[in-house]
Image 1 (tube, one colour):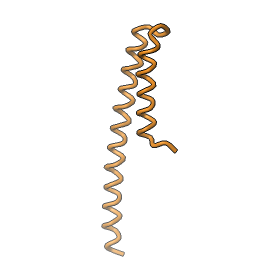
Image 2: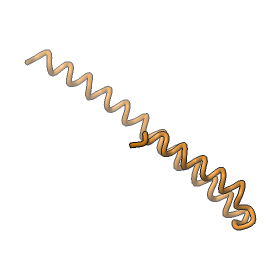
Image 3: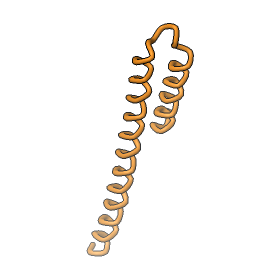
Image 4: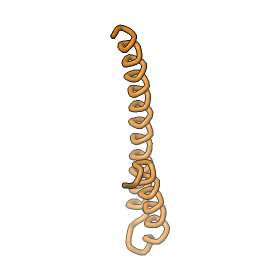
Length: 70
């Protein structure tokens, strides 16, 4: 299974290709909206990924502390 960050990177590459090659199909406003929305998705993914990593580290630390009392 593909890593989620690779999936997001692939999606971003596809958006760039579509924005470059789709000028005859999409209006400039549509391309701009597509690029803007793809950046929003990337930002949101990065934020969720960072928060998840932080929560995971906290859980590991809490688990280690609990093991001391067993």
